[in-house]
Amino acid sequence: AQSVTQLGSHVSVSEGALVLLRCNYSSSVPPYLFWYVQYPNQGLQLLLKYTTGATLVKGINGFEAEFKKSETSFHLTKPSAHMSDAAEYFCAVSDWTGRRALTFGSGTRLQVQP
Amino acid sequence: NAGVTQTPKFQVLKTGQSMTLQCAQDMNHNSMYWYRQDPGMGLRLIYYSASEGTTDKGEVPNGYNVSRLNKREFSLRLESAAPSQTSVYFCASSEGTGQPYEQYFGPGTRLTVT
Image (cartoon, chains in turn purple, blue):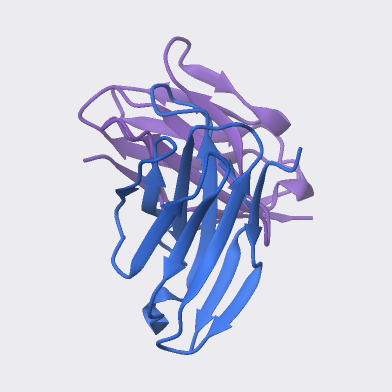
């Protein structure tokens, strides 16, 4: 079985500060990893994904994440937070049983202070 | 191109009532999914359909049934609603299950069972 742990249900940063959202996964096979963002009262939107190859993945809106197999981590970063980044962020791992459904972490709500 | 649409957006039911949540996608995707989102628990898979004509249980299927009506539509039915089914329900679709395809999410249905 696969699982995802997101450390910190709430993270608050100042506008212009570094954003770091933590994600650790558990998987018995090489994982496919995803970060999704959810703005208030909306569905989820893909930020970025890791499949194979380059371990540093760049996504939309200036976000990036680095796959570290030795640490079983896939942390999401952005050098400079913007007010519009305030949202909930979900890390997810792909299911390898054949259905490719996603197993989600519990989410991290990012607040950006002016 | 509307992507994934869900109806209704909001619903209030009394315990024991039944209802069907509708989902449709216009991206010619093969796979469709139903998730529920509860505070602090991320999204959990209820049912999925890998392709037209097939459905299978996810992590939390009890109390739900699904129908893959055709390639576009995937409905979720609550036969006898319970307060524990108060949640936000998301439908998603993807090209298929053989690769780590991106899942596209609908805007969600907020269901309250009293």
